[in-house]
Each structure stands twice: as C-alpha cells, then as structure tokens.
Image (cartoon, rainbow, N blue to C red; front, side, top):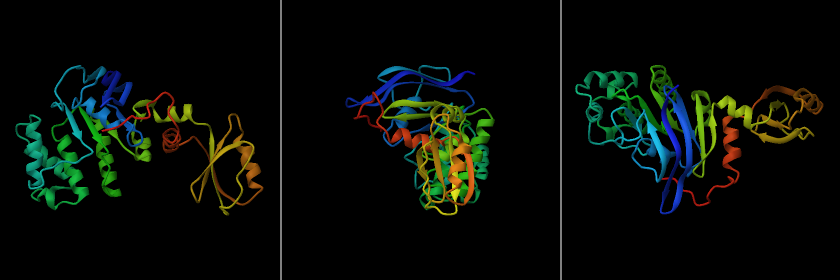
Length: 307
C-alpha cells in the first residue's frame, strides 16, 4: 500500500530545543492513523510539518507523493487544535468561504450536505459568535472537509464535544476512511484511539516510542494480565505471580510475570473472597501510554518542547 505521508529522519527545533527528533514513520493511503503522546511530546509540531505549515531542519517529508508543496494545499484538510472561525460571519457563509479557498467554485450543495450530516442545518444562518463550543467545533470540522480532501488532519477533533456529538463525529470519520480518505488525528482519548485507529504512533519528548497496529503493540509491549472484580474491594491481591496491580476502584487489573498461569493465580485469589468477574486481557492502549509517559525516555532530551 502506498504511503500517504512519509517522514524520514525528520528533526525540528525551536531556539535550540528539539520538538521533533529524528522521526521516521509512514502512513498508508486510506488508513486511519492516530497520534498519541503527553503534552509537549511533539504531536502538534509533527502535524504542522506534515501540512508544510512548518519545514524540517533535517530530514525529508513526502505528502501525497510529493516532497515539495504549499502549506495546506487543496488536497488536504486541517482541523487545528486552536479553533479559528470568523465570529461575526454566519455558519453557511463561513463554510462557503473555506470551500472557495480550497478551489471549490460552486460550494453551496457541498455546504448544504455537510450542514445536514452534522445536524447544523437549523443553524446555517446563525452567527458563529452565537454557537456553543460543541457546535462551533462541528462547523470547524465541516470547514476542514467541505472540499473533499484526500488527506484529513485533525488535531484533538473530539475536544469540547458531548458524548452524542462525539459518537456522530466518530461515525463520519469512519465513513470518510471507508470512502478512501486518509485520516490522521491526535488525541488524548486512548479509548477512542484504540477503537478507531488502524495504527497509532506515540511520541515522547520528540521521539517515536510506539508505532504500529494497536493489537500488535499490546501483544509486543505488554505482559498478560487478568481483570478481576471482587465483592469486597479490600481483598489483598498480592501473589508471587503478580508483578503489579492497577487499581481502578471497583475492579483491578493484575499484571502477571512472564509465563505465569492466569488460572492458577485466579484459583489462589478465589480462596480470599467472592469473585464477581474475571477476564484474561492484554494491557490497554491507555495503560501502555501511562507506562511510557510516566517513565524517563532513554536517550531523549530533557528540554524538548511542543508548539
């Protein structure tokens, strides 16, 4: 599968501080690819390099088959983390304006389609300043996709949305992917990333620390665990085969040592109290994220920044 985006040993610094350090990865065309990482890890800088808003100090970047090009060309759509809409304009006019900027000569039918898909048709003549944060977020998303981009880059697309709107936007993103759009998004929502993405890339202090399908990463990076829930949440969960207990209040995840037998551990724990449920699991993406983000990254710079 061809690469929609390819980074080769890309670095970017601000005032001598590395925001992105020797970054190499490839995003296949038509995939849904997630960027994760703690604040200051380099995600936004990487997205801006991808869109040619910024240019690398070192390395090469190829986007949609080209190594050179203008920032935010007509084949790309971008939803920035810092939302920016003309507050005095009406919703329909804002979307027509953005479509014209992307070379759409007669945007009215496309605009109407997106107003309906995002449940904004009844607010088409409302001024941006009158919208709630969630509705303004929908308008900003529509502005990013109204010209039917081949590459869609979304920086924290679910921020500010209520659960119903979040589910609706998720469905639209999946529909765009099924139609052949390459979708790249950054998020702090590990559950959404795990459910949606074909693959994820995790940055930590400007460097790549994870890259691949979620299932492969969970299989390679985490040991087998058991998720348990007891009637008494004060039960002692220590065991020779348990190397760590993740306590989530009403349930616990017990990380087992290599080659431990989950059934044997459960048998011993059942002698201590009434077991309500158990499941043999791999670590979640959230747990991998916390483990990596909470530990020093070997060989990385302490003064890395994100912008």
